Image: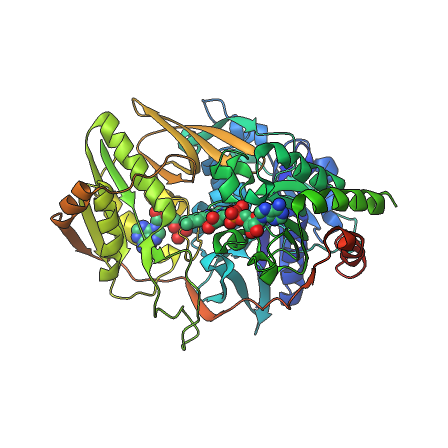
Length: 337
Length: 249
Ligand SMILES: Cc1cc2nc3c(=O)[nH]c(=O)nc-3n(C[C@H](O)[C@H](O)[C@H](O)COP(=O)(O)OP(=O)(O)OC[C@H]3O[C@@H](n4cnc5c(N)ncnc54)[C@H](O)[C@@H]3O)c2cc1C
Ligand SMILES: Nc1ncnc2c1ncn2[C@@H]1O[C@H](COP(=O)(O)O)[C@@H](O)[C@H]1O
């Protein structure tokens, strides 16, 4: 079956996010396997110049909706984004281009608009997918449920489809293309009105300049085994030595040692980096729920029976206060090479 | 203030998942069910709003009779009324839930409709935004702080690397995230009071699913890892393996 695929990609500060390349590469793969046409769209300002970076992953047509132009349709001032206007713009573009498949990343923004776009376009939703497959010309998706304790393969029996991809899972491959046709979306034709700005972002508070755990490809997390907040400099240094982000177990977040934004697990963030190093974390099932899909898990724990070792690819039974500094030094040496 | 909180019943988060024989759902044997942890935040927030502004808190769940358990948990925390939108089947996707909740909500003119940001069974993260689109209300989800003053809503929402401050107007749909409050423990008095609260039943509006489960399976078992026991002396070997075998650094 031939489809028309619309891939929505995100940008930040004038550059496309990593998730954008993941979405384009996966959408391109689906498009070529099903003989379908792929259109990529972005909402932003000053991103035209970056279009080539998307071309490398298989985009050959990019539609750009200018963010300032969209926001000028609202009488209240909008800082960056309104979920309702984004949902409308993407849905309208899907409709005018007869796209029967919309693909985006399950980032905070993606999750915020997916449900709205699905209703607007009458789509079935494959959300937070970790794998897509074509069987007899139809797409099926795999997604984790029960906090990653099981997986379901799902299909849709009806028409349109909205797919969101779990960030950091799909590894984008370059196609070697560089040609891309960039077109500006005429916002005037979208009939945006005041009601499309029913909730608007007023301000964004950046919690810290550090890399967020949800976006990082390498994560070093600390748990109660660190004994106190002051010892988290060990975790920070280890993370810094491999250019990673810092994470935490709920026990240390609840104790106020670390901010909630760092919590990994069922009630925190779900992460799937290439490398996850758990230090002084027992590996309670709710913690595993947030990180068990990481590609490579390393555990450091003084208790050889700690459950974390059961899912670890590598581990050292030992004292974090001894192992972490040694590991940090070793990483520094190797990374410097 | 008329406050509606949508609640769902989910397997306890410590449940060991076993796939049932039909390969489409989990094996229910021995599974204990709880009020979805994120919905506890929603119920707590609803009760706080009631304490501040007066009014009533109505807990609503879509599902089979079993879903009444979720409503009862909300009663124990202090919800005033409960409504079960009764589904004939226990097989429903997010779209199905959203449509049925929306049909009910349309007739209610609630000032605020609270959800958990996600249910911990299917981790949909879809229903609040689907409902808001279906009933044409604004929606803010993953909310860690909520202020409502004369219908004006200011919420903090958690995103990658920080928080967004969102401004909107009630009536509104809110999805709660951990951090917004500390859900209260039911006390003996409220547990007793909950027993006498009736649950109103209303039939489901539709039973249309848009997705179908082909197969449920367990994630591929991790082949047991290499665990070193010589402490510091193993560090350089670990790093070598991370580089040469796992190729992650
Ligand atoms: C509904 C619900 C949701 C939850 N959500 C989450 C969640 O999102 N994320 C989460 O993480 N948890 C969550 N939890 C909590 C979870 O059950 C655990 O309590 C928590 O993960 C434990 O954190 P921890 O591993 O840091 O602490 P502990 O379990 O106390 O483990 C500390 C570990 O450190 C080791 N240790 C101690 N000293 C040293 C040392 N010097 N060197 C090396 N190792 C040492 C110990 O052997 C132990 O294994 C949730 C619980 C519930 C009920
Ligand atoms: N069957 C249901 N009945 C009522 N509310 C529900 C139901 N399922 C989910 N919800 C609500 O929707 C939220 C998000 O669920 P989900 O989109 O499935 O992750 C939950 O936290 C509940 O507040």
